[in-house]
Structures are given as structure tokens and as C-alpha cells.
Image (cartoon, rainbow, N blue to C red; front, side, top):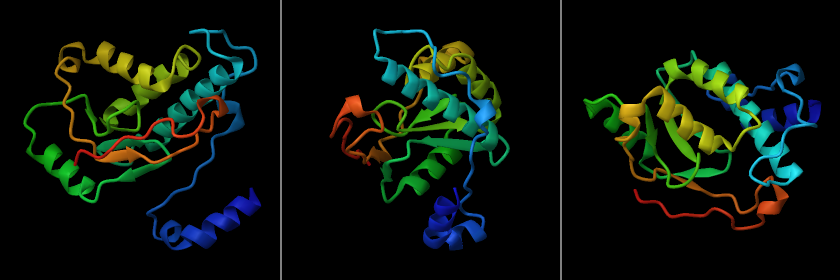
Length: 185
């Protein structure tokens, strides 16, 4: 931890001190037992543990961020943004007259989604409860469908403002070049 802390401050110290970047760590007690979870979708034990931890990580992060702002952008950790993502997103939110439960701002999975912060605590509880049931992108879709069934069918897609940049998943069985797509900005 001390090595990681030192590296983070060497690289991002200015941003941490200015409050633009916050580094958090989930308490180990927060995590459910990941050793003996049920098998679903004929996934390997490694994949089930990986996605279950990912669901728990996302739940913790949403709980932590719930009071920071009016909106929450859920990004995977290896994305690139389009040069105009901020202005396009801001303009869309400002100019849109209809209420939306979620904005899709990337083509695949849960690479980039925008939610209202007032939904985060409820969403986090759902993800934590369902941590070992299915992947996070499926849980996100199901939560929206349960919580906002009418508006879910008309969910807006706001161009792909983020691109998945990773070439190697933290799950070894996914392999290289597993999820690349172009910007549609």
C-alpha cells in the first residue's frame, strides 16, 4: 500500500492535492464471501469470482460517490474519451426536456453510462444483493428495467463518447483485443 501511495502521489499528486482525484480503498469486510459462490451461465469459477468482485467493487464505488454531484458517470478503468465528451454530455443534459433513467455513452457493455446520483444508493444495494448472479452490465440493464420500465424502452443513446481502450482483460480467459470499438462522436 505504501508503494502504491507513493507512486500515485508521484504521478498524480497535484491532482490529488487540488481535489480533482480521490483514491479510495474498499474495506475487506465490505466484500461478500467469494470462495463458495454458485455457478451460473456455465461460467468458470475464475470468471464467476471475477465478475462477483467487480459487482461488489461497483456497489462500493456507487455508495461512495452518491453525494458528490447530480450525475454519476460510470466508466470502466481503461477507456479513452472523445475530445468533445464533456461539452456534448453537458449540452445534452442541459437541453433535454425529457427525464432519462440512464444515458448510454459508449457502444458496448458498461464501458460508459451516466446515471442520476439520486439512484446510486438504490442501484448499489441491488448490485450488492445480486453480486453473484450475473455480470454488471446485465445487472445495470435489469435494474433500469425494474426501476423505470416505461422509460427504459425509450432509453436514449448519446453517441459513443468513450471508447474501450484496453487490450488485455484482468480476466485472463478473455484474452487480448477483446472489446475494441470506434468513436461515433
